[in-house]
Amino acid sequence: MNYSMSGREEDEFYALLLAKADEARRVLNYPFSEFLDQLHRHGAYRTAASKLGRIRSDEFAELASAGRLDLSLEAQVVNTKWRACFDPALVAMAESRLREHGYAGEKSGSDLSFGQI
Image 1 (cartoon, helix red, strand yellow):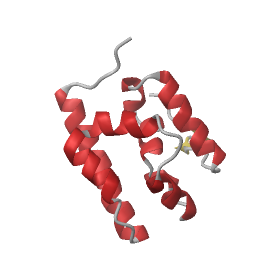
Image 2 (spheres, helix red, strand yellow):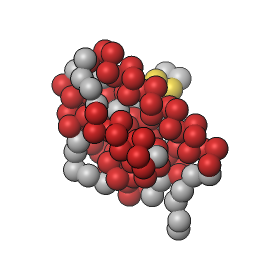
Image 3 (cartoon, rainbow, N blue to C red):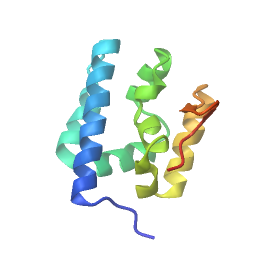
């Protein structure tokens, strides 16, 4: 199956990732330069797919150290409607990476779980 995003979806996902990166930069005082450079050069979908396929990124490590995995690319993919745009293997890698670092997902009703929209 070919996973992708429409132009409108790409724009929305780009705006989400940019907002989360800006928030993370303010909260952590970490530049996230590599991520932002890739986001601007390659777009949201290509950047996300590339980063999700890696074992780990410096950005993820910084967010994990600060206890702010809610701002991570992985959390944005697994907890939102965007998960359907990505290969299930990449989503599973993101979920595993988050769980390994103690992130259980966003509150959904009375439990913590990864969103499956």
